[in-house]
Image (cartoon, rainbow, N blue to C red; front, top):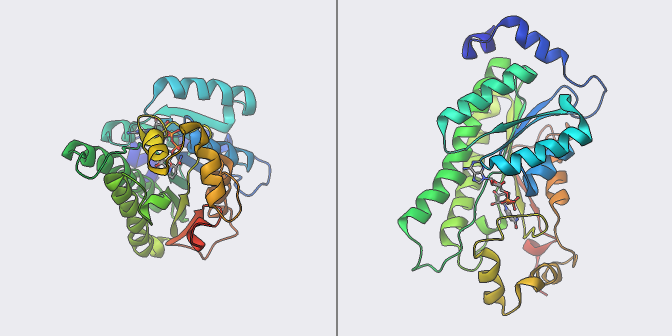
Length: 292
Ligand code: NAD
């Protein structure tokens, strides 16, 4: 068995793992998904959406405390068979190897990888340091590469294709205020997704991207200067940011974590089987028109 050889796992353990998958027929029944940076925010919304649609989900994050709290809440809500919580730093090869092994042991393989882990750094062009560039590159760009590569290895062994969904940003498409390194890394995530889609298509592995506009509710990346700098750039108070972002969209509504989760679900739902190397802007129409 290829998976058995890859991880040196006993054959019967993989078989047991498969038996634990959810039996009911739903769009994601018998699918296993791993979501990075999913102890909260957008990642957690994706986890919950996938579980609700029938998948078994591996919830991973570098933040052990946030992960523990989330794991306790998910256990109460969905029971122990729906998910597995594993601490995973996307910049650390050892923790990635351990997470993939735990995923295969628990669920027998993986079908969907979601690259969602991220941080934000907001500074002026001149204030950015080489360390800022390295950090964003390590987490967003190289993180996406390594996590995808680990998933692709298993998907190819399984031989029935798979899905990679990358959470990039509208900041990778247009220039936001004071985020030259973040925006560049998001653009790299986006273009890497097209390059991966082209190369992985022969193995029926689809790669698609969700580009969120500002999602302020439940998100931690708005801490650490990101929110303050944006509010300053727009001449408003931090508390008024959600309304500001809502007002500038065509639909005049804030984008929520659940909107991003729905987009991340559509790509893997089976309804978009011919769509790869594509992106979905979840931005209330912002990208379509000049600000009103
Ligand atoms: P968040 O901070 O709430 O969640 C990000 C999670 O990633 C955190 O739990 C954090 O611990 C984790 N993380 C950070 N570094 C990690 C690492 N090295 N390894 C593993 N996990 C790590 O933020 P969010 O708003 O939910 O953001 C999720 C993704 O969406 C990010 O990639 C972000 O860039 C992107 N995004 C967010 C917005 C927004 O406005 N919130 C807009 C566009 C794109």
